[in-house]
Length: 468
Image (cartoon, rainbow, N blue to C red; front, top):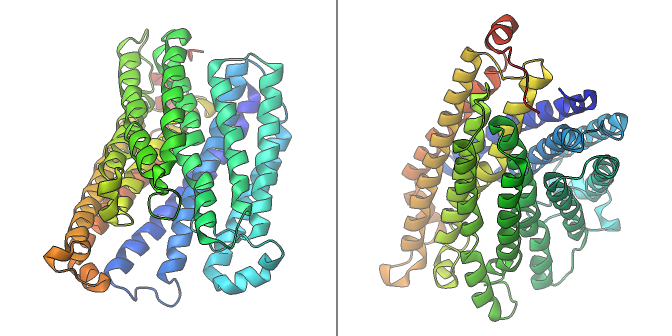
């Protein structure tokens, strides 16, 4: 580690991985409930499993982003973190709030949880992805403000780089757009209109800035390519991502009540969204191809390249598949949406967090050139296992979605009811569940890679000093 305060990232990374395990566990439970509807009922009904699954996804990614920021910002700024104490304090506040909220979902009926947390004082509960009690949302805002203050003060007193500026812009945007989760109008059209200002403007807006900054940081470290080259690419990618992503939000406005002009705006600009992700692929492979040194952490380099490719496939290709209004008219809310969501979240955001953990954790454990050979082989196996199984999940859901459209939404075929359609999709759901189990095994292998091989092996094979 170049700076002692970078060590505050470690608990964020560890807790993020623990929550990731929980998310996958509840994903497997949900997948089985698609097949065996009464599985674990009434202890964990489907709606509760889904809340836990999606909320764990959001929270573990936020922990990952915060850990990544606390690790890379001091190094980019060439100065110690403004307040390591504040970083540790906000970790425990955020962790406690997250655990208590998940326990609330599991142990208390949702309506009772709303009463228990006095949701009537400021009603914010009951919306997808934003099911957290109001008191939890307030806690998130406090944590985000403390986090951005800490990062911002570090940037102000240190070196200003493009990576830092892009990252802090994304983090501020994350906090600002989350404030719309407190706006809960009675009108359903208004509710959905502004609900997307959190959900879409996070994942197809400001989170992409965070993704780009972390990816650029890792590529600089593992390739030694000139910072100016990477920063030029970063400017172009981020500009295209923001332009296409912000106006492309219109693809969520097709069928909820806003004006018909969104059919054109949403279709045209969201059709452009694959472009920055394709450029990210070219960027990553070109930078690795021009590297000035062979970094010992081959696994982190692979995660960086894999992030670009899988993000392009998930957010780009699978997003484009159903984003045009004439197509979306039939596919909206089908399993094709789930296919896009799974691959996009994993490729763009889960993988970049796993990438920075793969790079930073060995350094924080005194291994500047990565873990030992045996550990990296296991991690590379985990990479391929998770990527291939996620593609399998995505293809299964894509087939299920196409069949769902044909059976349920095309009158000329003889439309079936929703439940009869779901019954015919069960064989595909079994395939999805099998790939989910394989994915979980890949995650176990990733976690195990940090414990495989001795410290002596790592130090003996990796005595080359870290490249700053």
